[in-house]
Amino acid sequence: MTARPAGNPVQERALQLGIDLARLPVHVALIMDGNGRWAQDRGLSRLAGHAEGHLALRATLVAASELGIRYLTAYGFSAENWRRPDQEVSGIMEVIANAASEETQSLIENNVRARLSGRIHEMPAEVQERLRSMEAQTSNCTGTQLILALNYGGRAEIVDAVRLAVERGLSVDEDDFRSLLYLPDVPDPELVVRTSGEVRLSNFLVWQSAYSELVIRKENWPEFGADGLLASVLEYQQRDRRFGGLSGEETERPGLL
Ligand code: IPE
Ligand code: IPE
Ligand code: MG
Image (cartoon, rainbow, N blue to C red; front, side):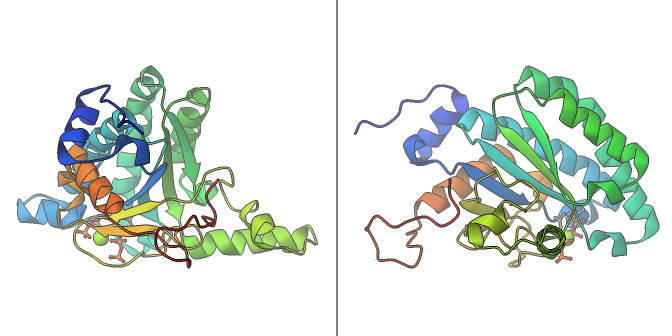
């Protein structure tokens, strides 16, 4: 098998680092942590950190799309983040609403489809409206899918699926259950990355990450960008994924389409 040649500068850098473009993860999921610490280190407000976090997601999305990642999930606000002071919560909501409006045109130009995962209906009306508009306007884009996990909780997602199953009187096996999750057509992430050095999932993709490779990056989220993504993919490619089988054998990959 010949190695796939680079088609753009991000792929060029990936090849230089030793990344195999034929073995990229299809779905990368990001726990974008450390905005507050990034701001604190610079004597800035936490909200300045969240605004910078938006720019970092833009840079990471561009890199992911050029690299050839099909699905990029970004954990932007957890179901537990409402516990923060009102001022921070409303500031984050404003960052999300403005980002949705500001980015829509460039998502379309870059053929990126934005999708939503979480209890979006519980978010402030104005934020919902902007998010839904971004989702609708990019719905025909066929390139990378950007999945924004907002007011998202992995346990809430499982409970929501169980409620549906009960309502419909279904008895479920694993495949049926998957079809009741928020975005059943999206394959499980092969790679979950968390920034800021924390080593926990914080209720992210609890079902879907059962066999994901976890990469912990030391930098805070605003400093991640293309370099952090490429380093994470390289680390992922150095892992030996066994799915309960033995090394080097063809094993069924649970949950991957
Ligand atoms: C992640 O950064 C963004 C959200 C959770 C909304 P944090 O705000 O958690 O930053 P730290 O962890 O306090 O540094
Ligand atoms: C996880 O970060 C949620 C997001 C990145 C959106 P948190 O900062 O909320 O997680 P904990 O509180 O450190 O577990
Ligand atoms: Mg945090």
